[in-house]
Image 1 (cartoon, rainbow, N blue to C red):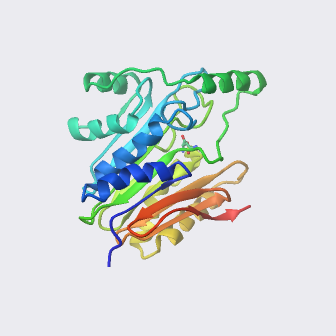
Image 2: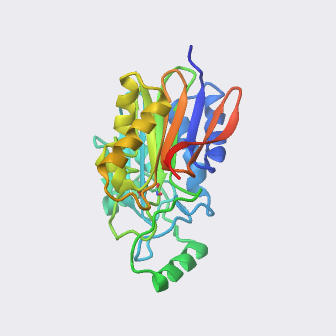
Image 3: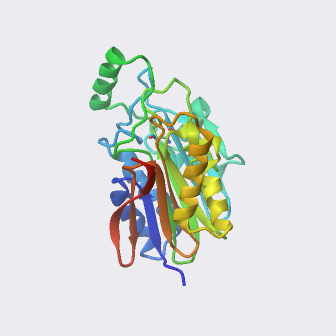
Length: 291
Ligand code: SD4
């Protein structure tokens, strides 16, 4: 029996995102709409420093955004290195629905967004600007991975019709090199959905996630019979096995299978996700390999 509808998403801010997604899902709406509507809340929150408005900038002081979305038919859309647009997830959806392509980046993505009617907006808030100026003084010009509770949002939804979709959106690693793109807009790395099996998304150090095709392998592990949590753990184990140096290498995965069962796992402690279905609304601490 399927537990549906159900939505899960990464970190504390997942609670608010799930609420918006639930408005769609509880009325019999589509998982794709839930995936988009949910993370738009996080993108608009100026206090979240890892997503959309208020996101930490690159080392030149520019906020650059990565996002992707995928539906139950393996259709997908993505934007990377996008500037000055508050809702990269909605631009990603437009790429999916209005173009023959999967991914647009940089100026091309922005030009497309403006043509689609998105408004230009400064995304660097006073707070993020101050933090960046402070970092510039003290830094050795090294990007920092944010392992606190304000991070990339990835959201997975199973709707009443039994269809899965997912979304992922971020301002990426704080103070990254200009032009750096992480895992979050890359289908198979930051997000993957296979409607026959399940869906997965990732947060944490994007480079490590890309190296193992993180979200894609979580789905493949579920295809081979693993539970969502075991599949997330197997992907974390793969990352651990492929890296000699695990210092600061936090990665977390969440997964949702076709039956509506959820799971998560991370390299280090501290990762959590939010779950909402008909009977529960909660924040769940992920299991992990290292303290
Ligand atoms: C990235 N995975 O750009 C994203 C951001 C993130 O902790 O989750 N940072 O690598």
